[in-house]
View 1 (tube, rainbow, N blue to C red):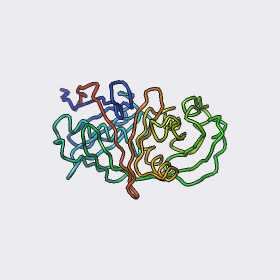
View 2: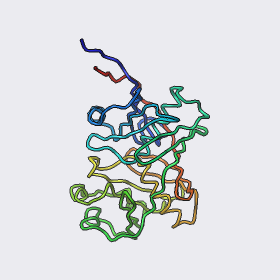
View 3: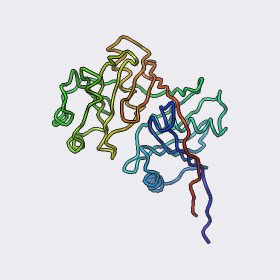
Length: 269
C-alpha cells in the first residue's frame, strides 16, 4: 500500500510588482531534508528557473535551490520567494526576519512596506582579460571586463546596447563561468544601471531577474557612480527592479514578490 501525503508548493514571481513579471520560482516547504536526486527531479518537474526547498532548522530554515540541470550555489530570487511564502502563509510574522542556512552561508530577509530586503554576501569583480570567444559571442565593444567569484561582468557604453543584445549562446556555453552579466549606466535616469544575465552553461540562456548578479553589480556601480544606494533594472523580456544598498562585504537587495499559484506536491512513501 502506497501512502500519499502532500507538501506546500507555491509559484512566486520575484522582483515583480505585478504578476507575470520578474523571475518565477517554485517554493517547496518540507518537514525535513530530502535527498539530492529527489530535489533535482522535482526541479525538473516544475521546470522553473529555480526551485527552492526549505525546512525548519534551528533558529531558521535550511534552504537549497535547484534548476533541472544543477544545484545553485546562490540564488537571490529563490531566497526572496522563500521569504515571501514564509510570511504569506503565517509561518513567520511580518516583523520577524527570515533566517536561512545555505551552502553560501547564512542569509536573511526582512519585510518593510511590501519590499523584501535580502542580506547577501558582496561579490565585487576584479578587472580580468576577456576569455576566448566572450566578446565575439556578445558582439559588443566593451568598456571594461571583470570577473567576480561567480560571473564575468561586461560594461558597454549604452543601455540600448544591453537591451538589443542577441548573444551566440552556443559560444557562451563554452566559457568557464556560471554566467555573464552585461551592463551599462541607465541613460534615462529612471534607474542607476541596467543589466542582463546569460547563463547557458547552467541550462538557462537568459535569466529574467538575477538577485545574485546584483551582489556584483552593486559594488561595481557603487564604485563607478560613488553611491552606496542604487536601483538597477534587469531588462529581460519579463524585466524586474532590484534596489541595492552596500554594506561593507555585504549587500542588501530589495524586491517585491507575488504569489501566482498555490498547490500541493504529492509525496509517496
